[in-house]
Amino acid sequence: MWRSSAPIWAELHERAFRRLGGTVRVVVLDNLREGVLTPDVYDPSLNPLYRDVLAHYGVVALPCRVRDPDRKGKVEAGIGHTQKTPLKGLRFETLEAAQAYLDRWDAHWADTRIHGTTKRQVAAMFAEERPALGPLPLEPFRYYRFGMRTVHLDGCVEVEAAYYGAPPGWIGQRLPVQWNDVHVRLLDPKSGQLLREHVRTARGAHRIRDADRPARTPPSTLTLLARARTAGGPIGTVCDHIHRHEGIAAIRRIQGVLALAKRYGPAVVNDAAQAALELGVPTYRFLRRYLERRPAVPVTLRQVDPLIRQLTLYRDLIDRQAGLPQ
View 1 (cartoon, one colour):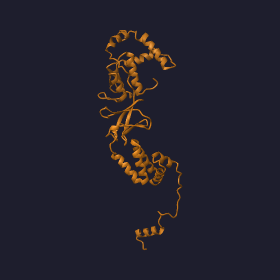
View 2 (view 1 turned 90 degrees about the vertical axis):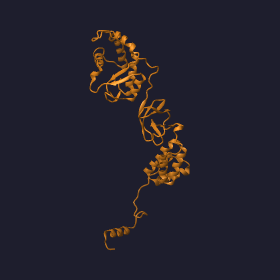
View 3 (view 1 turned 45 degrees about the vertical axis):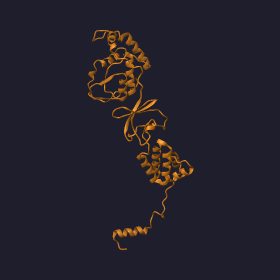
View 4 (view 1 turned 120 degrees about the horizontal axis):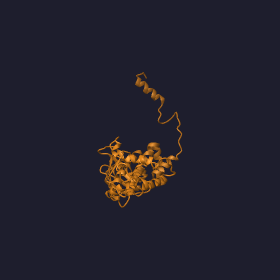
């Protein structure tokens, strides 16, 4: 391989099992990141994908003790033997050509030689050990990607710009999520049990079970709506309309409206919200585009302004504070 990753590392194990014609019961490995997240000779933390691949094949991983490579016995010697014997001085145009050359070398020389330590033919010894291999599963492992996701106020996690509902009670918490081209799976962070499984959907769309939809407006949503009404009447009216008509996606839209009010100021956004109501398009997208295309108003300094009092009033105040005679 030109590079390494958790899926590639796990796939190479599958290739090895198919090449051997069966599975082993134990795999002893170094503490490389693709297989072991936290090295510990007593209780290591395995890469989730690698762990699930081994479980699919009925195999247990036992990582080596840290900085103790001799625990793996003679396996490292086989790599040096291959580099010094069939590959020495050779160059290949592609990995496929090198692999084909090694396959022929294995079949016609490596398997037929007399092993230097055991003084027996390698193929004969493997023939004796083959019955001890476990059976291969009927189907190969279904690979997935994984990561940690936070359950947002709308009760969903985000995976590649699409949103998938979690069970009630998980808002604000982080869940391990697995996904492939077909499904998205939400898991319990403590037990690893499946919480929800959804079919993949398009970017920007939502998947949520009807049973997970709240029967009444949750307190967090009511708080957002109250903040919107405090920002101004038109803003509150627009947010109420969004909440009634945009379903589970309304939470994010309302948050977007409040973000616009923080960026441009409540007065400006209220003017935009009033225009949206008059035009019949009370949506977050309209407000955002309206404000983005709104011409910038130059800031000018004026000597006379309703907010600026007469200078004599400031003079009299300073005199009183300083105790000077009027």
